[in-house]
Length: 253
Image (tube, helix red, strand yellow):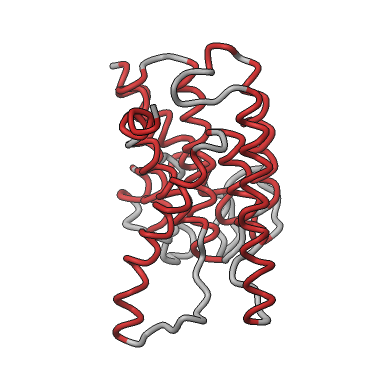
C-alpha cells in the first residue's frame, strides 16, 4: 500500500509537471485550473486524473477532440515510477524527499529544454537555492550530498566551467556553443552534489550526447553546427553519476 501511495503521488506531481512544461516556456501562469491548449476550455476533474484519463479519453480532448500530446502520459508515468524507485531504495527519509524534489525539477527541465532549447531561470535559480539550503540540514550531509563548503564551490565551479566553454567557443567559432541556461543548471547541480561531482557529470553527459549524435552525423541528418539541447544530457549524466556514486567514492578514496 505504501508503494502504491508513492506511485499515485508521483503521478499527481507528474500532472503538475506537465502544467509547468507546457506553460513556463510560453510565459503563462502555472496557477489556476487545467485547460485544453486548443479549445481553451477548462478540463473537468474526472478528465484530469493522472495516467488514467489519458487512457480513457483515448488521447483526445472531450470538448474539441484535439489530440492530447503523448507527453502528458509519459511525464506522469515517469514521475510516478521515479517516486516509487526513490521510496523503494531510500524509504521515508530526508534523502528521499530531496531526491523527489530533484526528480520533479529534472522531469520539467528535461522536456522543456528538449522542445524549446531553454532552461527557465525560475527552475535553475530555485534548484540553486534548495541545493544551498539543504546543506544546513545535517541529516542531508550523507554520502550523496556534500557539506556547505563543497556545495558553494560546486555552485561556482559549475557556472564557471560552462561559461568558460561558451567564451572560448565563441572566440574560436564566433558563435555560442552552449547557452547560459546550461551554465546555471550545472551550477545548480554543483550546489546539490558538490564540486567533485562536476567532472563526472560533464564526462558522462558528453559521452551520452555523443552516442546519440554520432549516428545522425554519420547519416548526415545533423551537422557539427546543429543546435542540440544539452540540459537533458546533463540530467542523464547526473543520474548516471548517482547510480555509480558508491563506485566513484571508492575510486577516489
